Image (cartoon, rainbow, N blue to C red; front, side):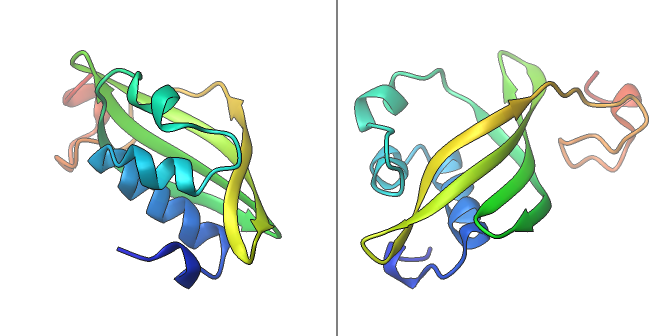
Length: 121
């Protein structure tokens, strides 16, 4: 796991934050954000994170899809995140969410190697 000061790109930070979300490490997520707090983060429902796809990165922007399971349903979070340098460390500033869904013929995010429609749909 990377220390905040060892992270040199917004993509590295985004990947480390995804890992922290999967471990429910609310302190790390708050420490790597300009606005999120441990209290706010820890009140969210339990989510099982399944898979991360980085779609594109440029400048201080990372666009990704993160697949997760909540209440036995698989969902996808599609976000374009903005990061800023603050005190010589990258921090999450904010994100723009996009409506997104898992397509029936794409591989199931659960990792089964089956199509979504034949697996967890």
